[in-house]
Image (cartoon, rainbow, N blue to C red):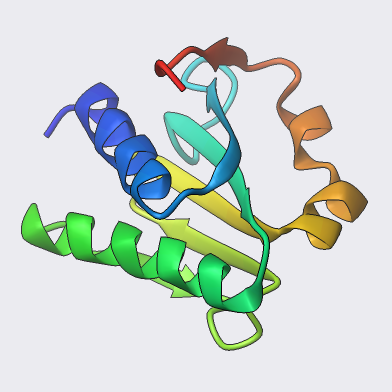
Amino acid sequence: MKSEALLEMMVDACDNKRAEDIMTFDVKDTSSVTDFYVICQGNSDRQVQAIADEIKEQAKEQDIEALVEGYREAKWILCDLNDVIIHVFHRPEREYYNLERLFKNGEHVDTRI
């Protein structure tokens, strides 16, 4: 699966669980780690976990392994799908860490949301 198609699928997965303020960044030209970063947030631990669960389920349906960190704490869950890395935050942690500033050199991608 092309990384652009995977990105769209993962943004849809986040949106399916009502993730808020979804931002995507194309970092192909500036990162050797991944092609795209997605940052989104939920309003509760349970919602943050539900977003991560949907990401894992959608990836599994495409035979893509999702490596997940931070699930139990549900404050900042990292879902690594190689070509797309998704950061699912609880609102206060997103404001505190402000990852968007790290990707300022990446091109913001409009994924319809």
